[in-house]
Amino acid sequence: MDHYSKERTLVIIKPDGVQRSLIGEIIKRYEQSGLKAIAIKMILPSEDLIERHYSVDPDFKKKVGAKAIESYKTKGETPPSNDPEVVGDSVVKRLKNYMTCSPVVAMIWQGAHAVELVRKATGGTEPRTSDVGTIRGDYVLDSYSMADSDGRAIRNLIHASGNPEEAEKEIPLWFEDKEIMQYRLVQESILYDVNLDGLLE
Ligand code: GDP
Ligand code: MG
Image (cartoon, helix red, strand yellow):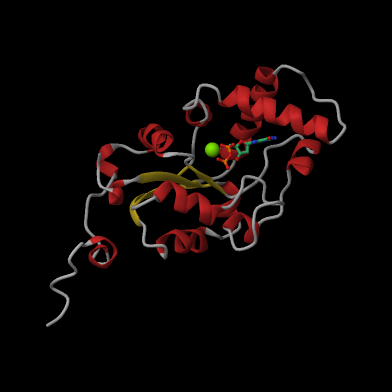
């Protein structure tokens, strides 16, 4: 197994994050945790890229569809269909509209527990219920109920990989190897060196 410090995660600042002028604020949150940015670029994603991105987990459509049907029922509303695949398809269609409406910033962050730390700083999927102190909790107000009633994707500023395996599948969709930097940050000595020698003069 690679050392802890080699874990990588994919982060996308979604169109609303760019349009809200939050690029700097979002990068600051990840950067100050000690993680290292090893790739950053602005791109306008194609619908095909978004389709492939949300197909990394082959069950995503079914799972997200089932979750959405459940939430319609909890609200006492009738879901548009009782078939998770059909509802999942419509969620992904809305995600494609949302994710291709403006440039996004794609990044790879590397360091110990990168996936978990980025998700902790990012907060839960629904901004309405994500914790204060997280990026989604602090900077946006969207909810599943408003997004569903307006027939659109929920606007939650950021995508962050769900686990290290997902990250390693998502990264090659967004980055070529030559776009990914391999370098050492001076601060990695204090974060990871075992003996901490060479600091005193
Ligand atoms: P994330 O990893 O926190 O972004 O959440 P997921 O991977 O579970 O979902 C990816 C995206 O699908 C989210 O950012 C939402 O846009 C959308 N999504 C997830 N769950 C639901 C849901 O229950 N209802 C609706 N309408 N959209 C959802
Ligand atoms: Mg996810």
